Length: 88
Image (cartoon, rainbow, N blue to C red; front, side, top):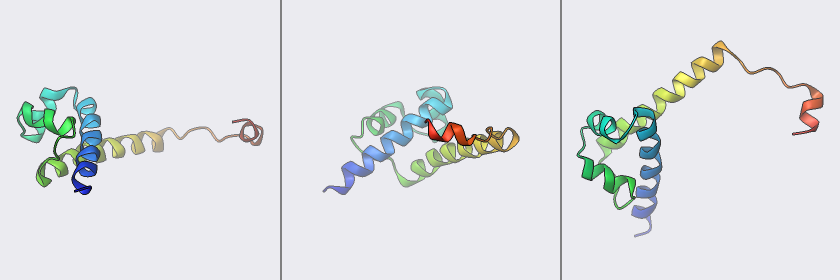
């Protein structure tokens, strides 16, 4: 079963980002409605979370994406000069 390990690994990476965005494992468990031992298994990629948990985790990622996009819209990065493009 090649698909399950890849799914679990992808979920683990997403959940690792969620831990950072939520300020730790405990706040993430509370937000997701999960037990700490369940989160530990998902973070270790031993299994993937149920679909409802995955969708809640993706809400965290999408909120962060929206937050960053809004900040960038308020403060767009300076345009690069042609000389800057020649020397990365």
